[in-house]
Length: 269
Image 1 (cartoon, rainbow, N blue to C red):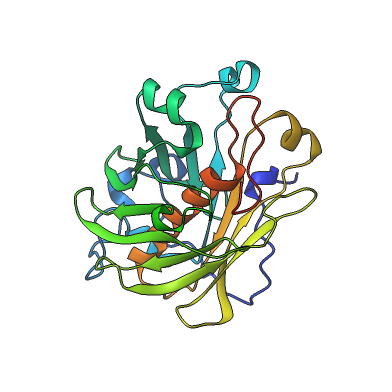
Image 2 (spheres, rainbow, N blue to C red; image 1 turned 90 degrees about the horizontal axis):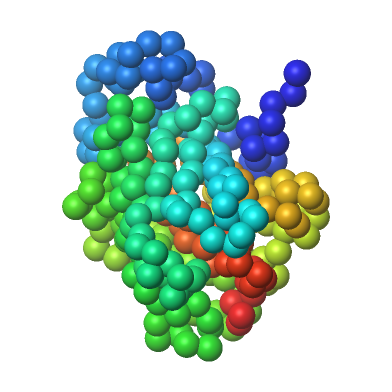
């Protein structure tokens, strides 16, 4: 029996090797939540992020809200972050008031909370209200990533480019550590849309954020998004968390829709 589409391993073809899972992410997969964490947390790893040290890829699945699909609005967006076996690592919830959502749409500011299997908030994303068009280069998109909440570990910052969606992955002091380069036309008409992860000076890709093609019916009639993220296994766990923030920022910039409005596909719209 084949796994659902959103469990499928992204086709990155980068010859990365992922070791066997040593600690399952939740109690529903083999034991109490407290028994699943390493006995000694690695030095410098924020609490709740220990499991990320063992993996080089994750899947992000958006939970379909039926109210959203039929009448064009919904309460809060929810996501599940999973390993390549489809096991839940974190549950993500958007925190936003109704006025902000309805007045500003996809431009809205918001906080997103990541909770582990024990219900602890381990990561918080903070997105301020910013412009989305390259015609306004002085106020482009940015997202702050905190782990644990209250401690900033990095930022995702949109870089100005006349044609391409480009982002800088930054550390806690806003120093650029990596780059993300997207396609000129970010629309998954019949296939995946890939944002290549590179070193701060460019060069060969070392990872990827991929908006996965869900099939014609799902893409046309629903707004459920599935993403895959791949990164080097030995990447700083804090940067793995920042890359998850980058994925959510990309989703809101290019793949989310509000009511009858079409999704954006370029840096101009």
